[in-house]
Length: 66
Image (cartoon, rainbow, N blue to C red):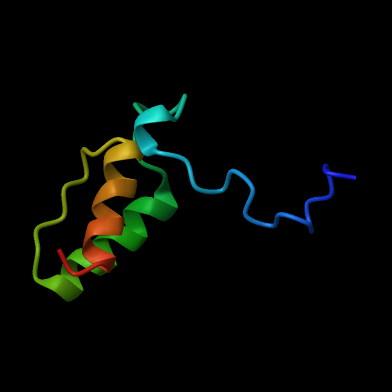
């Protein structure tokens, strides 16, 4: 059966943040906390006004060292 989540554990776990239905909503508390930690570690300024999509992209960039 193709609907078995174990056969494709990542499925659609990775979607482009630009395609998120709720991407324009304010970032979540978890995103804000993680992003703040990453910004502090990288010596970068934390922007608390980011949307969910922007925060996700910023987190990815900081994790990649950009």
